[in-house]
Image (cartoon, rainbow, N blue to C red; front, side):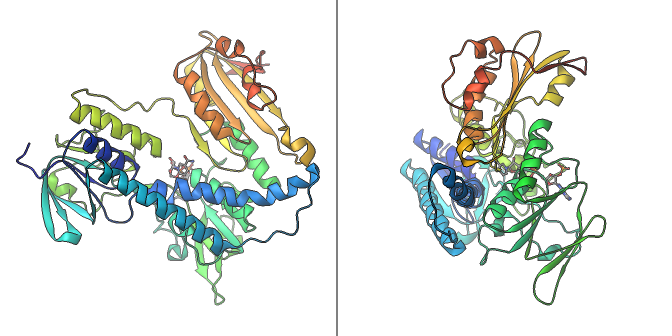
Amino acid sequence: MAAYDYDLFVIGGGSGGVRAARVAAALGKRVGIAEEYRFGGTCVIRGCVPKKLFVYASQFPEHFEDAAGYGWTVPQARFDWPTLIANKDREIARLEGIYRNNVQGAGGETFQTRAVLVDRHTVRLEAEGRTITADQILVATGGRPALHPALPGHEHCITSNEAFHLAELPKAIMIEGGGYIAVEFANIFHGLGVATTLVYRGTEILSRFDMDLRRTLHETMETKGIRILCHSISEKVEKRPDGRLDVTVTGGEVLTVDQVMLAIGRTPNTEGLGLEAAGIETGVTGAIEVDAYSRTNIDNIWAIGDVTNRVQLTPVAIHEAMCFIETAFKDNPTRPDHETIATAVFSQPEIGTVGLSEDEAVKRFDEVEIYRATFRPMRHTLSGRQEKMLMKLVVDAKSRKVLGAHILGPDAGEMAQLLGIPIKAELTKDDFDRTMAVHPTAAEELVTMYKPTYRVKNGKRID
Ligand code: NDP
């Protein structure tokens, strides 16, 4: 081992890379980690964390409106975008410091540089103009927003990266895509007072989610004032003399906006990493190919997180890092488990979901019971807001196992985290039924829906 400078060298200081470096260092391994931009990666620097801060910012106008029903008179509110950006940046800088310190505190060495593989044991640190050697190498370089070179005028468009640093809040924005990022940002911008249009090529937004949630969220967003065009794409983006943008969408309509944001997926960061020099294979999307233990085709080089394009979620990258540590350093080969991952979309209202959607379940099981409730959350009784909450459990009629839970409404993400436990543990609807409700909460619906709303037998709905 001492033949190499490091036992482990990690390329990429995001959630996955930092976790692996920190834990390996705490085990007494000689660890180095290189990050070319900022420690913390997509999640901390320009993803989950700043996004959630923006979500909070964008919710205040509705809170101000809702306050009236509870007797409050709220004076005319004013919003200052530069204040939000500055405060967000301060918080991100604080978190970045924590990430870096965590590695150093555990005894790891951090490098602020791009790192490139020279061969299977050698890494060049570009900013330092030198190479180091390592016994094990972990690639955790993440991904970046996909660009759209086929779209005429794509150079005028921004992605989520730029959305976190706009000098001015646009008056009108068009967002292309119907996934997590498009939907979350449509709600953020709308909440901040921006005229927002979402343009999605498919039939219904959020293609990987339960159809009930998708439809109900779509309707609710439209009721709030977000324009959603499905079966639509932008065909060209042209800059006008006044600096605004004209976007021609399917059917010929021209939308005049201040910004066009592309949210059409993310691309793994694998270019210029020296993968060819080290002999590492990539797949069709450019992602690094790994086996069930996150090992590449080169047996001392591993890859985790978005660069492998398995499931692009922060907790998944962290889990993959922990499994990598078990496998590589604790003699305990451990495969990451990518089944039944609870997730949230921080739309407004929020989505929290875990397990199979109704459509997936009816394909896999002969008979499925659907328990479904829609109601006005208690908070909205006095506020007068008409928004409905939706809860749905998908149950296998034969085994009684709860296969999926889908929630749309306030705190749905928090509920999904907790529902992840019984659903991962494969508990049954009877276990839910004998669980006492917590009253008065919205979540109590999850344990008080005693009768199926309908069943689906061999693909046919029975009411
Ligand atoms: P998604 O994969 O969620 O969505 C991409 C969207 O872009 C889809 O609606 C897709 O359509 C559409 N699309 C793809 N290519 C084109 C194209 N050429 N023209 C027009 N539309 C196109 O990606 P995101 O960028 O929203 O997010 C990336 C990942 O980041 C997510 O998969 C998620 O894992 C993660 N993320 C998680 C969050 C969370 O946990 N809350 C928040 C934000 C991101 P179609 O449906 O037809 O394929």
